[in-house]
Amino acid sequence: MSGTVGDRDSAQWWERLARGEFVVQECDGCGGRRFPARAFCAGCRAEAWHWVRVDPVGRVETWTIGHRPFPEGTVVRIRLAAVPDATVFGGWAGERAPEYGQRVAAVLTTDGSRPLLRWRPRSG
Amino acid sequence: MTGAGRVVTVGLVAKRLFTLADRVAVAGVGYTPFTKNSGVSTLTLACRAVLDALGDAGLGIDDVDGLATHRVGDSVPPSLVGPALGLDEPSWYLDQFGGGSVSHAMVAQAALAVASGVAETVVCYRAINARSEFRMGRAANPGPEAQYQTPYGLTAPVQHFALNARAHMLKYGTTEEHLGAIAVGQRAHAVKNPRALMREPITLADYLAGRWIAEPLRLLDCCLETDGACALVLTTTERARSLRRTPVLVSAAAWGGGQSFLSGADPTVSAAAALAPRLYGQAGLGPGDIDVALLYDCFTYSVLVQLEDYGFCAKGEGGPFAASGEGPPVNTHGGFLSEGYVHGLNHIAEAVSQLRWEAGERQVPGAETALSTSQPGYILPATSALILRRG
Image 1 (cartoon, rainbow over the protein chains, first blue to last red):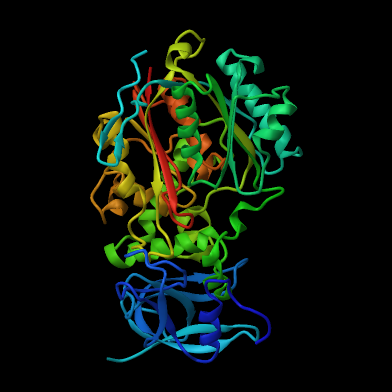
Image 2: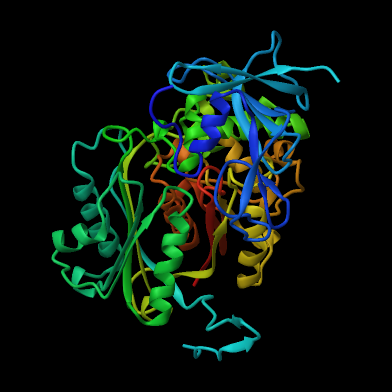
């Protein structure tokens, strides 16, 4: 990794992801969890928070398959089990096409300059 | 004119400084031709559309005291267009950031300026070379959410609408044929519109044979990228009645929040669902009162979800409803899919043509009331809409 990835709200999230930690913010005021990273809790307006590690698992909400002139391949949008009000994008690591509501887990990869998420089917 | 109402304060909530409904009218509409390469600057396009709209209204630049536009770094602000036309000291202007989500908010704010008396006559314009200079279809999202999307190749509006359309298919059984029916129906309208760029009729088979852009969206799900400009002259209803064209009154104007990546909103519900009750409430109307609907159609799915969220059918039934042809005529000019894409203003301009009963072969007989809408709040978390009626 070279240089800073993300912005002033998200740089720590990217740093932790690069170390293999999947984290979300947890509000010190009300305990609400949120992603992506930003200063204020939309529930109670508190600015104090801390990171919590969560299982990088969720369910497939939707996907698209890109064609020229866009990058080819499947991109999925995952609703996080740990933060139902949050979704995360990523590549698709399944052998077959995604299914609606399919349970998935994240696989961490990199493009050489920043960590990337791919999502693979999981059982149970 | 009816007087401005009292300020009624209940606790911290100030209600209704005045009622906007029907106080402001569209008195003129202007266009440049729609093309794939205008060969001129956006400043030239803007000036031509502004002058065309004033000519339509029977007014001159000296009658104008306000200018408004919206843009995303792709066009010219009022501070250039005004001096370029010899209008050096407008008493009001608006340079609204945003694309299709805010086109109607821009007009709504101009209506507020007129209703409040800050300006008497405002020209709203949108001028873009969205094919020859600034490829609208490849425009990247502004904002912090892009860092979570671009690494996966998600950079363009069509990809996000593809995700939303797929979510609707998965949740409600919406089909490709439902989306195709919207594209085919709008093309049939465009056949009757001399201004439209795409006037060859298409069939569902043509639609299904189109190449994928971002599955489940194909070529004919996507709006055109167009060079062109549109302008509207807004003035008081009182003054509009003294001018040469049939006034078209702003009966309701609403704008507000939308889908945000921060809130993880359900992709099958657009921001129009929350906005619609406020909009209809202002006009004292419901979806059954709308004679013609101009629904923002950057992609077919946008029409489908708005049929639901503006109350023309139940949530989840937008696909079969669109394919059935029930409800008011939608996008009678062909929309952005077939007429051209001026980012929202050509929807309002078509509403005005319909309500003046000047829409030629595509006229909806006796149209009295039109709904015209902005991008329903996906990507940029904002949307806006107007209800217009024949004055």
